[in-house]
Length: 487
Image (cartoon, rainbow, N blue to C red; front, side, top):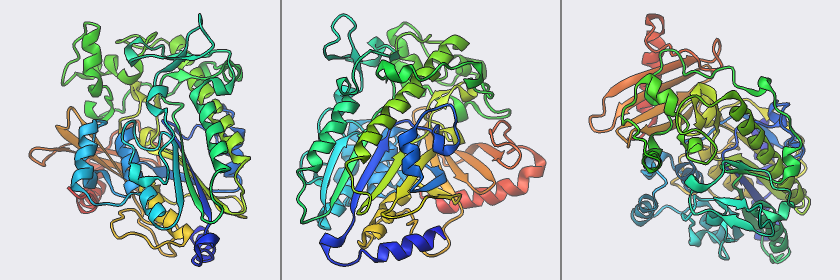
């Protein structure tokens, strides 16, 4: 029903430019489906929930790479990570990609199709903005927001910490929403909306950084919560039988460890990896650099994460009041999920369900709410928005439109590089299974495998790849990995 509803509706907008729908694309950083509309009763997200009530909510949507830069570049170009060849947040990598690639990204394609396109906040990774995408220069401030905190001795204005090693992991200043960047950006979007010419449709891309670290939100959002031990994960240890490379998400932060006199092993043992895991979180002040994070500190972090989610939810509610639901397509997504202590990890950067599953919803004018259990991918957004706007899809796209009146692929693909790109884990999510093959990049050989059965183990706590009774499933899914990933 979902695909047919979309197809019929989108055909109404194949005519004159002025008849095409406006588009509001809302991106949220590091947001797992920890929302009321996804069944999480702990977190207060009334505005996103209200948007969901008139959207198609994708209950099983997945990112292609659980790290900001690569994920966002994949979304905006419509290409999968292997086709992009960018697997880090290094500015040189994305510059090299753009120099060798002639791919027209989403914003630029809509601009060339007659849309006024405008960007606010974090759409691409910091410093990766593509000026050709936008009709006017992007709203500044993304880079400075990264370490925006409030000096308690001088609370009149935000303070910008030069780097994470000197930045508190969370803050709850008693300030207005507009005191922090997300609130100021929301006001800027609303102001700019009034400046758009009425003779052409607009495409607004609005990117909220929170709940990305550091967890900074006004005190009123912290006051919404009093987390207890029921908030703590019930899967704090890595999956049984899993390789260290599957869940150790700290190999990108070796430089920070050296700054405090610690030397992280290049290939840690299982216990060393658990003691070091979650280094993105540990690289901020007030979190131990190594060892088990105490329960009280975990509760503080969970509290702060929830507060940041509610802060962003409030901004989205304010934003939505100014967009006409009768002629605007609204799409909301997160670039990847986020571990909150699962498998001893704090952060993204794995191939597990927790890091790759994302909230994603699309609201059409005059649509009633519905939910979809079909497997969907963030790389599908570019072709989907083209179809909804009545614009032909460019030929380079590697995702599949969610509008298509046909059977879609029954899998979702994710991948992640580990240990300085010595290995690449390529994951395939089917209706029942998650299978991951870890390839040595130099030789192309498979060094590790993972298999999780979501029918019996939705928390992915047992790696079944080595079990003799799983051999047929492993063989079948590995063939699909070889067929579907372009290397």
